[in-house]
Amino acid sequence: MTVLKIDRTTGDLAVESGSWVSISGIEEIAQDVWLYLGIIRGELAFDTDAGMPFIGEITDAGTPVARLEAIYREAVLSRPGVRSMLEGPRLTYDPGIRALGVTFRADTDFGELSFDETRTV
Image: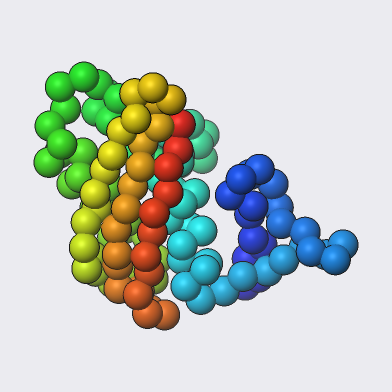
């Protein structure tokens, strides 16, 4: 199956030289993880269990950091092609810009994935 690359800055499909860009291997797994971690649980009408529990856990004041890390660990490990976590996840939060950073290393079917992304929440 062909997987089209998404530009992580714009959220649009990536285009190079006038053509869509396809991806595979570790880049495909990284994109899948990136997309999944941005889905708010309940927002997909066809699968209301998919995604992250932003409402009710992640954005609630007082949720222990260990619980947040467990949520992200479980989410990453649930993605196709991810075998195990090698390190992390480590979460950082910048309240000034309301940005959540997620950093981890995982073993995948295509080798080691180093992931370091920040998103506004």
